[in-house]
Length: 184
Image 1 (tube, rainbow, N blue to C red):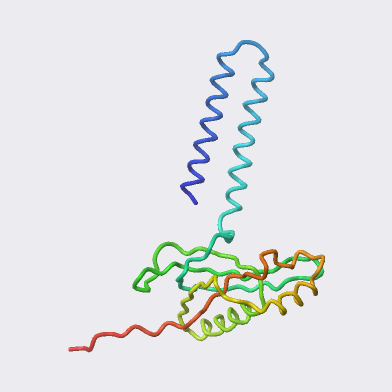
Image 2: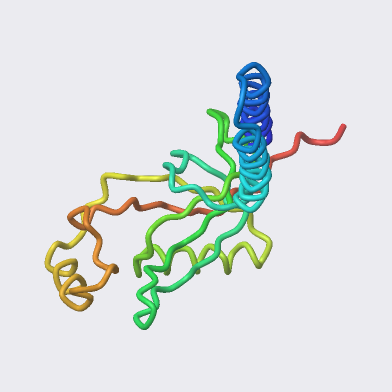
């Protein structure tokens, strides 16, 4: 994220430099030139502050297929404010050997009762000291009749999923402690 912020900052600086060069070489309308330079400078500062507030927001990109769960937060849907809720995972991708790789990333998945129950069980295990891994499965079949009943209950709200009941499902499991070689 810092690399993209640096690139964006350099891009705005380049635009400001080009505008300054254009304003110096063109004759007349000095007030317009000064106001354009000030506007670009203010826009640069506002964008920088806006990017600072975006750091740490969860992504809606796909979660890795295999991941290490660092923590989970569950936000239930609110019928009054029509907030859809969600389940927020802080995860690291796993390599072929099951070892975490890369930097941690926050992910958000839509709230479902089944996913919330599994996430709550995983939180309980993590609070007891267990290390949790997860596997994402996108081909889980859901009960269409149950989905229709749930959709009718929230009809007219934003809580109805628009993807025909197709939600990513995940399987969370405790990681076995590592086996150590015998002492000599």
